[in-house]
Amino acid sequence: AQSVTQLGSHVSVSEGALVLLRCNYSSSVPPYLFWYVQYPNQGLQLLLKYTSAATLVKGINGFEAEFKKSETSFHLTKPSAHMSDAAEYFCAVSDLQGAQKLVFGQGTRLTINP
Amino acid sequence: GAVVSQHPSRVICKSGTSVKIECRSLDFQATTMFWYRQFPKQSLMLMATSNEGSKATYEQGVEKDKFLINHASLTLSTLTVTSAHPEDSSFYICSARAGEGPAREQFFGPGTRLTVL
Image: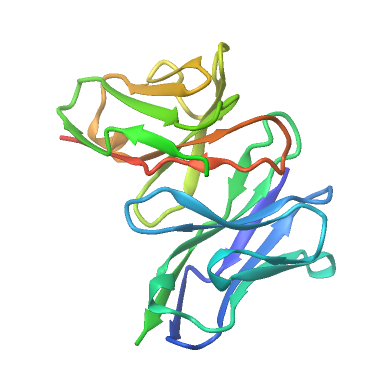
């Protein structure tokens, strides 16, 4: 069964600094991986997804993630943080069997300091 | 883009009553809908998966008689929390997907905050 671990439940960076949110996955087969963002009291919005094409995936709002099979990682980055990036971020892996449901990590709360 | 709505956005009810939450895909046909619950500062936990016209598949530990799911059409799924109790208070989120395949995007609704007094 697939699983996802997000290292760091809370990350705080200064405005303009690099954002790095960590995600490691466990999967017996090549995974499909996703990053979602959740603003307070809202549903989830897809930032980007990896589906076995290019290992460097670019998403919305300037975010990107790199799939590294050797490290079983799919870390999310953004070169320069903006105040509007403050939110909860979830990494997820798609179950390739059955209903192909998403398995979410624990989430990382990103705080941006002015 | 694909839009999923949920109604109501917030509901407060007394213990013992039943609450129905609607999830609609507004501009696409959703062959599969998912229901999640999210406790404060925690991740989303999948409750059940439903396909139009068939019975929902519940995750382990989720009481199917307490959380009734109906997926009557390709654009509507409902979750009914029967005989709600304070421990059922949570943020309920639905998602909808068109078609099959693990790379298919799930589109999420804005969530429903349920408070049981």
